[in-house]
Length: 111
Image 1 (cartoon, rainbow, N blue to C red):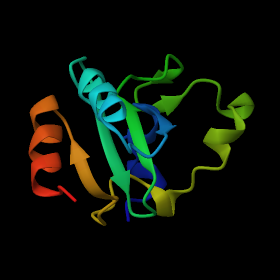
Image 2: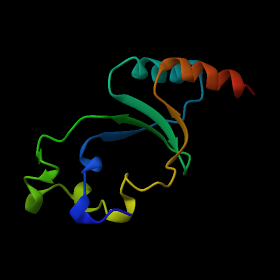
Image 3: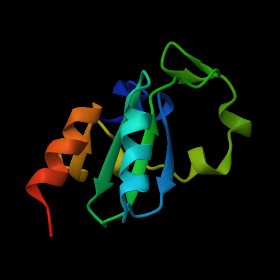
C-alpha cells in the first residue's frame, strides 16, 4: 500500500455513480451509450454493484494535493489509504472501456 507521502491522488481524478443492475436491452444500451463518451468506464465491482466512473480531475487538486483539505467534503474524508486505487488488488468483476466490450460480454453471458 502506498504511503500518504507518495500519494498520486488517484481518488481525486474521477467520480463514480452507482447504476441500476442492467436487466434488459435498454439498460445495456445505456451502458454502451455511456462508453461512447470520453473518459468513462463502467464496471461491476466485487460486491456486484454496477458503477459508472467518470475520469475527471477535482478542480481543487494541485500538484496531487488537496487545496481545500481542511474543508473537503465528507466523501473525501471517508476515503482511507487502505482503499487507495494504487493498491494492486482487483476492484471489479467486469470492466468495460468501450461499447464493443458490452456486446462481447452479452454474447458470452447469454442466459
